[in-house]
Image (cartoon, rainbow, N blue to C red; front, side):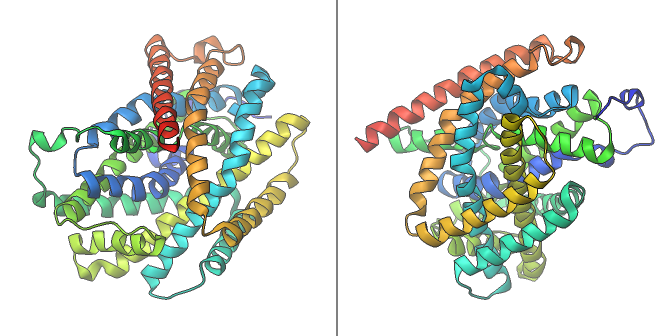
Amino acid sequence: MLTKNPAREKNDSSRSVFSVLGPGILYAASAVGVSHLIQGTRAGADYGLQLSFIIIIACFFKYPCIRFGGDYAAATGQSLISNYRSQGWWAFGIYSVAQIISMVFVIAAISLFTQGLIQVALDFEMNPILGVSLLLGIVAVILLTGHYRLLETVSKFIVAIFSILILLAVVLVAGKIDWSFSKFLLPPIDVPMLLYMVAMVGFMPTPTDASVVQSLWTCARAEEKGQLPSPSDAKLDFNVGYIMSVVLALCFLVLGTGVMHVSGTELETSSVGFSRQLIELFTETIGTWSFPLISIATIFVMLSTLIAVVDGMTRVAVGITESVLKEPSEKLYNIYLGVLILLAILTLATMLKSFTIFITITSVIVFVVSPILAFLNHRAMWSDRVPKDLQPGILLKYWSISGILFLILVTLTYLYFLLVNVS
């Protein structure tokens, strides 16, 4: 049984900030490989600095919803999934169905991109299905042998090193960019542009379902340490990870602007082609001498993303099952890890040519579920399960409500124009 440790509530100068960090860094790691490397770079390459404001707005309004994952777990010792179940079958059902449909495609998509990046960095060619199979096999071994402790330790160092490289690249490329105010103005708005901006909002810095994984990682870390984090530690951990994810998103946009947009370079559509451009993004900025360093760093950051996502999706599947059965089982993690990996490989093997269709379906699910999860997380934090003294203040309450309304507006806009285009 996890318990509060009163000593953790006091200011302990002997503890470094680095020791407090855990789930927040895993959040940053999962964000970098999915939204930032692809969405951030693409936004900068296509539109320069014009979408900076969109990224900042999205990150601002999503903050309460995603933060509530760690806050709820630190206050109750339970994940958000258990709270969804307590709110009723409708809440639990909406979340569960959405996750079950999307999780395999998310794993498959990140695996496909990661193996393409590794091929480019190490300069070899391999059948993508075989490459994904070997890659996910390595991920499975790491998770089965190291569990949460290894995941957290590796992610801390990888994210730290990669962040330094990105900041260095941004400093070097800054001189090539026109920083005048007019360059930050939004581009002309038409239907394709509006859909593009709405998609940016949906995936920056991550989809809102990251809040659930955040709560699961907080519980996992508490199990490792034998005690729950203090509210202040949980807040610090998440804030560091979230701020890093926002800064890195803007950094990739700047890199895309300084290297691709300024030169008029068109982005490749294949995973291998885009991966090559991504590495060149750094080497053209820092210098060709940095190719080995950039290649290794990029491989490791994508591996940390993939490991974090596979672990997170596996914990979600376990959490859903345990909420139904009402009985925890240590074997479920190993079983679901194997099942999800096999399904991801089979998905790519049978649907690779039409894979973009399933990514589109996953994107639609993300948008539809986003405001619902924001609403459920709001209810969770002000439910009877959270002690009154641990519930957020009035500012965060109204910040959360404004975020819910914002996500509703964005989702309705996305669905409307998507249906208009389809019809």
